[in-house]
Image 1 (cartoon, rainbow, N blue to C red):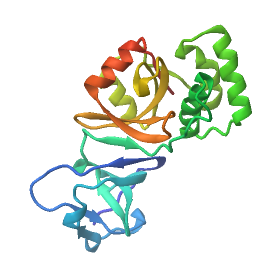
Image 2: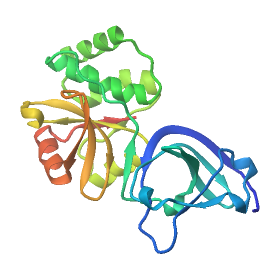
Image 3: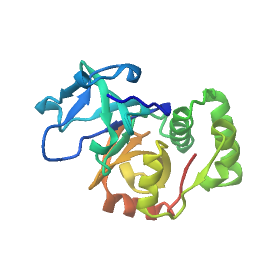
Length: 232
């Protein structure tokens, strides 16, 4: 196979699913894109075609974009053109808030956001920053000093539409969003980590688990939270 590599990027890990397309799905069964031949092309097992694939690297070779995946005992490269555009889920580890207090909910949500960008801020420093923010504001965008210091950027997503939320998730950036009435709480923060055609995936600090919610229900809870959201 003709080999031309022009980009190779380590990335925040994320999950993808295969498109429903005619014919056979396949992948390149190699862990190194520098030594690819036609013999590396392998049929995808039928029982995996509807499963999630964990992506940890993006590369450009053989004139197209490839995603490096792991799935059970399989390792290889999937062509981006065979990946669904209507599904993405980021590999963001859920964090359970330490107590039922609002400040601990906010610390857990913001920690997930910062940690996904590689921040190593201590729990003590994070809580001090959140408590200082709480004294002066209840607006997410006013966390900009903290977020920029830890991630070098901030993205104001207040009152954006769902297409813009999806675009940010496709950029491999989780989103902290303010909601109301989730978990029967008047107000809380959750972390959006993905979407498909019908659902959004989010990490819930209250439960410490990955959860899902319909777009309509998310819209309702987000509207009750004044449509506030931030990312980086």
